[in-house]
Length: 184
Image (tube, rainbow, N blue to C red; front, side, top):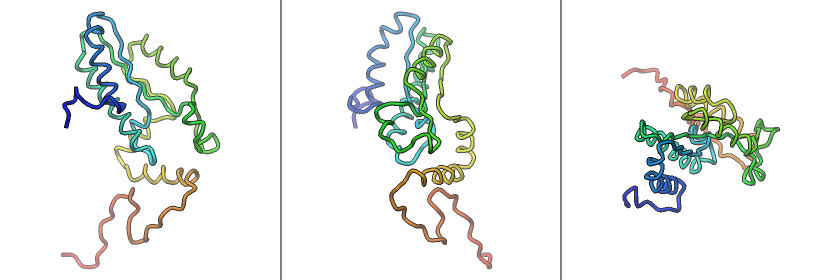
């Protein structure tokens, strides 16, 4: 396995790390620099059909969070941006549209929020649908969040879904204790 500084430049996390590390000497020398890591709200909460994308965005966010602490007091500010659904060519082809509860921001709105956060020396910008309550609920009861998201996914998912026998819990449910009539 390659050392982290020798990671493949073809994946998003490695590209962000390699580019930032290459720029750090100049950023440190300036004494007043900003590193902006663009993650995604999908880097905060795992979603069906977005696991790989979400994992790369979470990796970028964790790199930024660690880098912020590493560079504390050195004149290099690190900002992590978590855009929500943003109107791009990728989302233009998505079945997830307004009638399914998806509201897309424009890239210009995300950019304006990012610039405002840079000027205000913020360390995080979370855009899109309200994530705070969802993240708290996901920490406290991930099965409930999984059920809620699965219910919304049904409206989008046109493919037949496998059925789960009633005796087996859905994969997103917490295992239930057995209700045996005898105790051991």
